[in-house]
Amino acid sequence: MPGFERHVFICTNERAAEHPRGCCSSKQAAAVRAAFKAALKERGLSRVIRPNGAGCLDQCEHGVCAVVYPEGTWYGFLTPEDVPEIVREHLVGGRPVARLQLPEGCVNTARCAHKRLLRQNAKAPE
Ligand code: FES
Image (cartoon, rainbow, N blue to C red; front, side, top):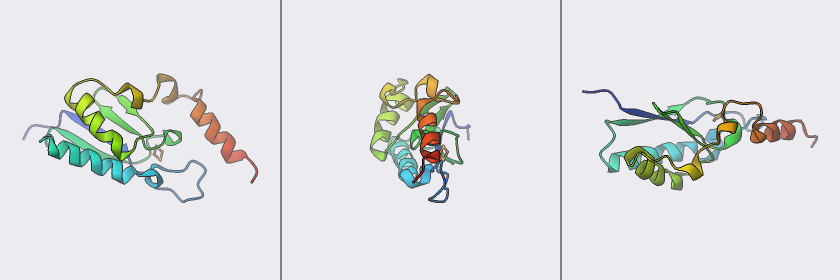
């Protein structure tokens, strides 16, 4: 059997409710992963593109996030309803869904406004 052509890593990390960084698990991550599995199966792509549950992708401030490899396209603030569009447009059509992509300035950088906001909220007195 040939290897997978692509992987979609979906963060399904779980943390305690009071953790300041939150977690994707509390934001429908399992449903997002299930939606990828269902949409890929429906199109007969289960043996070509693999939706993997992943630990923390260090994008906790960006809602449920996922990264598509080998191209390294990052998506954030995902809901299960977003998944068919990603599968149709990006994984089948080759056109990443711009409205769901994380901006360059948000991925793996301390300058990200979402990251600053999360840090400020974690420090804010109750
Ligand atoms: S918990 Fe999902 S990116 Fe960190």
